[in-house]
Structures are given as structure tokens and as C-alpha cells.
Image 1 (cartoon, rainbow, N blue to C red):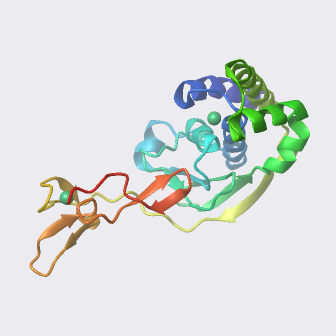
Image 2 (image 1 turned 180 degrees about the vertical axis):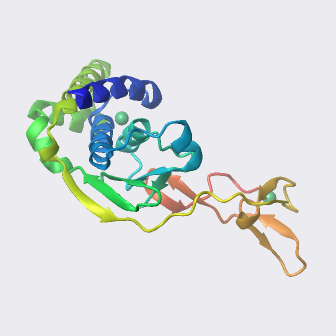
Image 3 (image 1 turned 135 degrees about the vertical axis):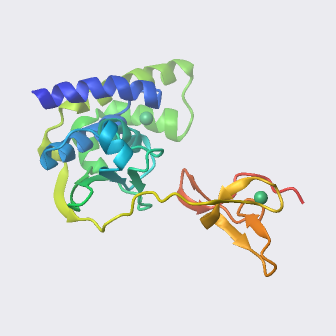
Length: 228
Ligand SMILES: [Zn+2]
Ligand SMILES: [Zn+2]
């Protein structure tokens, strides 16, 4: 019972963070809560987030990943969220030092066939995939999508694929010196700089060699136009 209370409370917090309630946001919360419970630990609070004591490894960057951040307390910014660029709806939670993690995978096909009404999937296809719906249909879809999301809070553990995994030790975020780029004049983490033969420092933006996390995952992509 306590578990489900947690999930309902987390859904409200997640709504503020994510902007809306949707099925995979809730599944990210559920999967995380399952993993935390199996490990016998709580969401990362002050000590754990400062010390990076609990790590969450996500394999996708979608709604699911926001559910994970809210439920585990492991975020992009506190260095406790590890993004593995694999493209699966899965989260692994692990305690630093123990490195025996619990990985929870969500099989979208299975969840959809069991919990998503067929007419909602058709509406999804029209409104979201083909972008053909009108404003009224879009609003109707939003509400149905949120309703399904809330209902998924009750999905039983048997619908998730849960296993123990060995996680490689992951270093705590190191603190690096900063160097100043000779082109843009800005400070940049030393490990992200390149030097030419004369020891002149360049940042990766000025070299136009940037990797970014975009919708497709990690791509060799510089979001900024380079001034020539
Ligand atoms: Zn969402
Ligand atoms: Zn620069």
C-alpha cells in the first residue's frame, strides 16, 4: 500500500517537472520505485545526491527518463543519472560501492496491448504520429493520455521485466580545472579542450566538434551555427 501512495505522490511532482502526465512518465516512476524497493533503499535525498551514493542508469531520453529522475532523485544535474545511449525503456538503480543493480525493463508492446484501449491508440496515431487531429481531438487525446498514465500506477510488478545486474564501478564526477579558450575567451572544463602544437587552447564549440543529447540520443551535432 505504501508503495502505491508513493507512486501517486510522485506522479503529482512529476507533472510539475515534466509538464504533463503521460503513460511513460508513470512507467518510469513505477519502474524506479520497484528497483528502489528491491534494493531496500529510498529516493536519493541530501546525502545521497551530494555524494552520488545512488545511481540511476536510463537507456532512453523520453518521458520515462523524467519519471526516473523524479522517483529516484538521480538527475542530469546531480551526476547521479547515467545516460546509456541504448534506446530501451529501462532503468537500473544501483548503490555505489555495492554495484549489484536492479534493472527494470518496460515492454511497451506488452503494456500497450494490455492497458491501452484500442480507440486511444488510433487517436494517438492520428493526432500525434500523423499530426492530423484538430484542436478538439488534441484536447480529448491529452485527457485520455493522462487518464491512462494515472491508471498505469496500478500495473502489477509481473508486467515489468526485473533482473539483478552487475554494474561496473562508475567514478564520482571529478572536478576539473578550467582553461580559457583562445577563440571565444570563455572558461571551459580542461578535459573538453584541445590544444594545437603551440599550446593554444580551443573549446569544442569553436572547433565545431560537439556531441549533444538530442531526440535521437547522443549525436555528433553542434546546436550552434559556427561563425566563420
Ligand atoms: Zn510525457
Ligand atoms: Zn571557444
